[in-house]
Image (cartoon, rainbow, N blue to C red):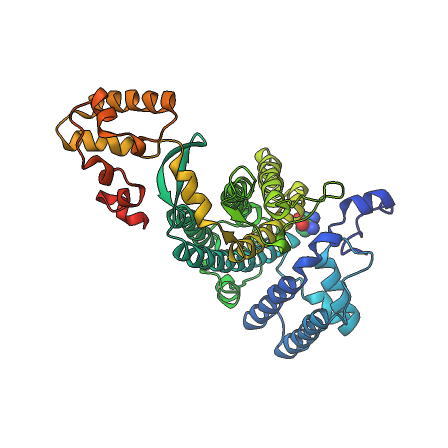
Length: 438
Ligand code: ARG
């Protein structure tokens, strides 16, 4: 069932009808489509394009449809071209000929543009809320574990850090993700309704009314831009990709940390699975799935960039392809943030094992150099001296703090008894700006 056809001499081919239809996926926009129509009707009445009573009758029917969709009484099914056709045809079935007046001064191009924008706005706001929950969970977990652990560069043990500082690094990332979404929400909040198909309308409508009614800052300045802009979809997909990248890095850490090689954390049974053959296995599936699903969100961003790149102004049917990729990314990002939140809140942190790992790997080597600098040695020379100390330790299978003063003196006589306190792992974190990590 469709809204057009009069100028066609032949029936649409069945395969083409299927190919063209977006109803199976854009039915998600059902409620937004009606909300947009309600604002449109209000404006049409104010601009004398519908009578007061016509406006009331359409409004009442649309509100009923909205309620029926919510309760499931009105089922989003059937042989429709898209959600806009479904709503208009359902309205017309309900109130007769009057329903056909709804589309006055509107095109499906500005209609779909406003629907998707409202949907995206709500979803982006929900995602910021989920991120804020995750940030709080990370903060709670971090504060409970100011314990020391090895910090890595190149996945090689580098310097002592705290588990708290490590987790709070992710708090920083997700906080910027929230800011990015908030900025996108600011930029996208302009109403395309009233732009028509591409060139406005000969009717004297008031786009300010619909913009305000639907919570937009203002109507679009340019009609052609209004109907063809999908920047905000791309911007949100970029933001989602960055969120997924952050989630994926954290997932990777959890996967590593929960391995037998590290044993820094234990992922709760609820978010792990077993192996069908190896009875001892406990696999970090939730973290792996987040890492894997990152690819699909990146894919949507690339897909959508590619869909848009060659399109002449204004609307082209290619743009119908925005929805599936975008909706899938929204669902994916939301579920990944929620799963990560739960995985972190139930995570068992093995403070003792992390502390033990600090002991191997010369994590206080930089501090030995700092010690020598504090005694007056230029840093570059100190770096060389510590290199020799490390070789000595490797050859003798010792940690730096296990060397005797005599052994230290074989390499440098600038080292005194106070070295041991200076390079003690817990003490290190009391020095200079390292205190921040505690
Ligand atoms: N289903 C279409 C879409 O999602 C709605 C807009 C149709 N406009 C048109 N000129 N055929 O893009």
